[in-house]
Image (cartoon, rainbow over all chains, first blue to last red; front, side, top):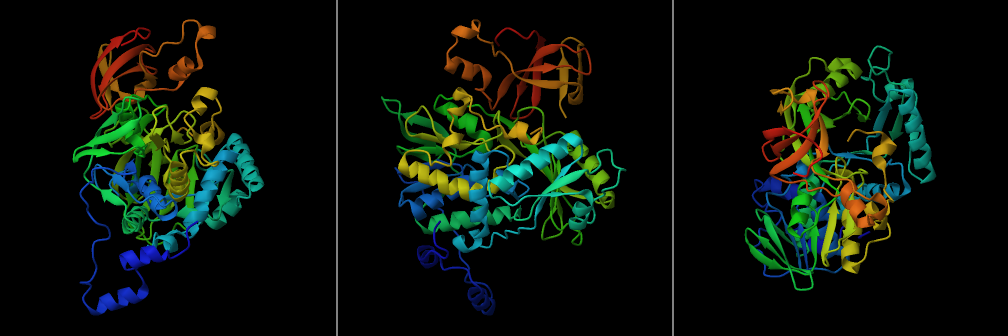
Length: 429
Length: 90
């Protein structure tokens, strides 16, 4: 991991600090400048990353900071923070079942713990604990299995009785009254939430300071390949850009981009909805999630309850979902948290998530020389941003997948060696 | 909420009466033992996932119970047409 307070970053971007805020407060806050440049695309780059979300920006940052690759461009068709990175419900945890996933997500969780210092940017990582509820005997068995597996992998995990769950989250109804009563829960105390906008802004600023070109409003429209079939350039709405290494990190639009290079991916894109309530006083000290009733909820620092729903049932790129999906989630939450019944919802939205058959991401090279994938994160990519960025950058620089990422290659759909977190967690999405 | 035209019932019904059954036109290898790993991978996992018009199988589970092929624009979620039949490639 890069040393905290990398002097190159601090030198390049006039670090944020308490002293700086103090100075600015005496000068009317007129000295703040743009956090990253708005460069024109150059004609060629060593690496072009398509997608200016968390994963793409983190990859670019680590390429520049640790791998010595400086001619890097991140192409974003909209603006930084306008895609799924600004639409998720910000939950960070690492309590997955399989060893491959545990290695990847735990690596990421460890980076989260020092991320604000690394980036010199307050990402507001708050390890307030993540609770996953079980409502049936089967749920409880699955949760216990996860807890045991996590402990064997050195990841903190505890099984909670309903009374223990209530002690950690007092507004939870653990009586037998709800249709799906709480029978037990898993607990990862190191898990929590972070501010998603700050994460992408922090990575964009740090990458930019190291010389990465973050190019917004630049949509990729085609992939050029040379006579040998290798990637030679990308065509964009701002002109063609030559590169021998192209990384597609575009979440819901991964299939569209891969199609430009003639690939069909094992991915389907679905809307995933989330909503926030009006702000209320602090009532929710941790994150609570439940796979059985397709709901997860935490409270933002502004006081809004941030709620995630199930994925919609049909593929779509429309960035909106069906009303009955969020309705079902709210019905369930009102049963589990009776005090929420008169709470009003302020906003709801959807992001387009790239779902793989085994609900594990795809990281690695493809049959097209020079074309790499970092996609398929589906409904849970936010938590993996720091680890995915660091390990994917190392893979790109080496030209071979990092050992932690090797099991997540596209090849697993041919060999059948799936990392089936979907079945493991019994989630519907 | 989609309003989906069922070609069997000849009326448009709400999405919740239906189940989405994936991309249309995926045909199981005729001779499973002879199919290569790549053919199996394509059949089992590779999807077009188009941004635009898609052809997909739906089943009217809480209606007539029958399968059909729906043409839908995934940019706008607009259902275009539907037709009976499941096996033939689109």
